[in-house]
Amino acid sequence: MTISAGPHSAAPSQATLIRAHTKAHILEQLRIPVAVISSTIFPALALLFFVIPQQATVQDPVASLTAVAQLALFGVMSAFLFNYGIGVAEDRANPWSSYLRTLPAGPLPSTIARALTAMLFAFLALIPVLVLGATLTTASDAFTTGMLPWWTVPLSVVVWLLCGLPFLALGLFIGYLCTSKVAIAVTQVVFFPLAFAGGMLLPPFLFPDWLNTLSLFLPSRAARDISVQVFTGGPVEVLSLLTITAWTVLLGALALWANRRDQGRRFR
Amino acid sequence: MTTPTPSDHLPVLASASHVVKRFGGATAVDGVSLNIHSGEAVGLLGPNGAGKSTLIGLLCGLRRADAGEVRLFGRNPLDPSARLRLGSTPQATSVPQTLRVSETVDFVAAHYPDPIPTAELLSDFGLDGMAAKQCGGLSGGQQRRLLVALALVGRPELVILDEPTTGLDVEARDTLWRLLRTYRNAGGTLLITSHYLEEIQALAGRVVVMDKGSVIADGTVDEIRSHVTLTKVSFRTELPASSFGSLPHTVGVETHDDGRVTIVTADGDATVRALVLEDLAVRSLEVHAASLEEAFKALTGEHPVRTIGQEQS
Image (tube, chains in turn cyan, green):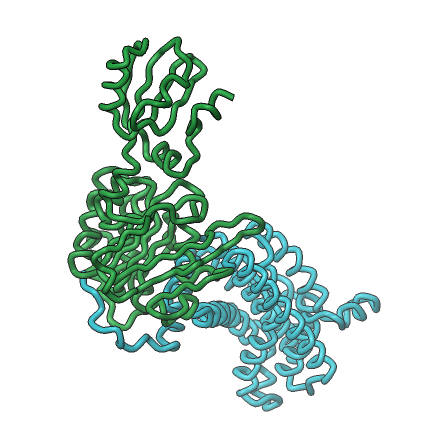
């Protein structure tokens, strides 16, 4: 046990801190494998049970791509909402997270680490969806016939993760506002209607008119439309981009407000 | 009764000047001024709700003062760089349940420029066999030891521990005390809170007593002890309680529902002698050391019967 050699030793860089926090977050998640496995295979199971049995969809490359894009976004949205909403609420109740605030690191490393962890697990959920889509549907025909360039796939993965941003903010908002038990309930109540009305489980052309109109105002619908449009090589609609940007700004502001409010209550 | 200490000329590592902290309507810290000098071991003593943990939270950068100034290594403790040479523990025993012991130490160590190697630290704390265990699987004593180890991993110049041994058995407590003495002997500065005078005596050279948000005493352990070592002399008597208020060294007199009278005194021997010499009719005489809680109450003027007149009314 020794005391620091000198007062002028350099502090670890932000990159070092982000890496350490990310590693801790990932390890903590991996230690509860059931949670990881269920969130990872959930969208793949939905694809397997709801899409694969429909021959009309499976035989049509564009319909297949649409279904894969919808469920990919479904996976991203659930990873973001659940990882953030419930994770943040649990951390708030934990004296360990207060202790972490006494370490020589600002709020940035842990916030970025949490986002990176959420993205990693969202990405893991995308892999089985892509594999099933490639093997059990005709989606891959779109690439073999030259209808779509190969880089549509990595581009789409990035777009899907970016389309998850409003849900990341929504998760933060819920997490800073609710206790962990309430956060679980609220996240579930918010998640399924958003996913369904956003057209992630059923394509919106099957919606009745009123639902379709309502749906167009939702962040999940805008995210779904952009994801599908990018993955099927169609043009991205400006309205969808405006809708998702507006929601991201709004939910981001709410998340920031909830965070300030929470900090103000606990750490004035 | 601030007493100049020999360390006054040494650099100040942490300081509070006229610090006020309110929660809602309640004032948790009410104008506290305190300097922690390099190499000191300061015990912060006080009953529950005295404001100890709030003051610690202010010094560790967890909270923002409503008034006054808090400095840590010359900077605002809310600035992360001010906390580079600080080590602390959470008050409650809270470890990341699913992380392994070595992973937890590595994680905290990553925040410091020159941390103690994990294996060395775990061995110092008798946790070397535990490195691969998940923290949630450690016993209460091991978890406490781990938390204190985390406070020391960055080779801090100042360690702030909030009730580090609460809930530990005597053996685990002695182990922690030994480790903290090693840290002190290496030149480390220590600020420790406790309910127990014994703990402060074992680790600290200087004692700061807080009550109701204020510092009510600050001095060496012996000085504070002379204030807080009170004796209770209790007995049965037919005489009114006011007969005993004028005895020398009396701090307070209590009457109990069962007819017993208790004199709280600064000198138990003198009180017993006086009872005998003045031939006061008392029987079933018992002499006890007053608990720290009672001593605090006497110090803080909260004792039930400070003056006889008030008591009898």
